[in-house]
Length: 295
Image (tube, rainbow, N blue to C red; front, side, top):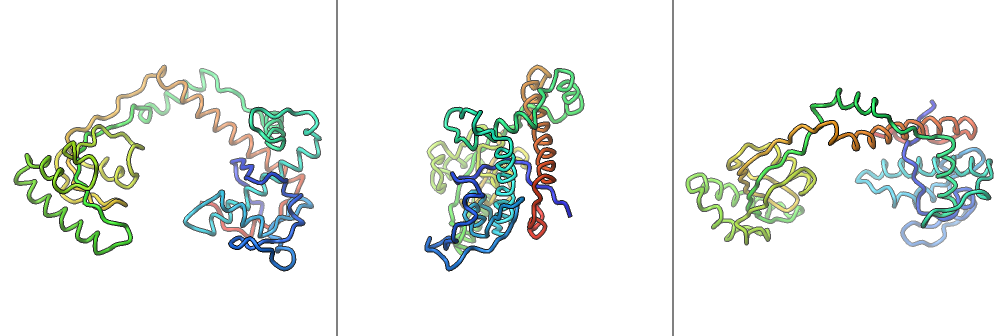
């Protein structure tokens, strides 16, 4: 099975190339003390062995709630870096490149290698126009909503507190249905958010400006009081949506720069992907088939 390797080039944090680290002894990732003997080999790129210990060290740069996925991403990042390092070494690029800014010599070599071997053409005006014509419905100003809320705080790991916050929220919602003019008063009396000083007003909110789970729910609400509390990591929120503004369509002139950047990134990703597959033919990779597939 010829599994694809990741498209994103991750140089990692190590200053030594993978090959230079491969012969070192393993260390306990918790205590840092040396373990007896060499760490077991997990992957091989060409003649270079990548140990389980190296993958464990790399995992700190690929944090994920699923440790198996973090391990797979770390292993693939090391494979990519070693493929590129081997090709840099074969072409003897280190003697002819100059680092830019804070680049290390390894990073500079990889940059030059990809510029030469996986060049990215700049999308022309016609390509941008074709994308715009095919995606007009998606190219809009962001939607935004005008929101007030009352936060009834409860820690995520305190079920009893969260149940109390839910019950208090339901009680406040019932009272506010009968007396909506008391929202400011209730926010000042009950809310655990600093916005209580403004009567619970959060102002206009666009996507990406608040806690994701809170934002996801409020963006689906209609104007008026929410009939149920909105739950987030902070607790339960009593929410009132005062207004909704749908984003206006963008003209081609307004969106051309973003379209060009998007198309360039897509072309670059595909070019790097294809180049890495070529390198895999030159430097066979063993061990990736034993890792879980990426989502």
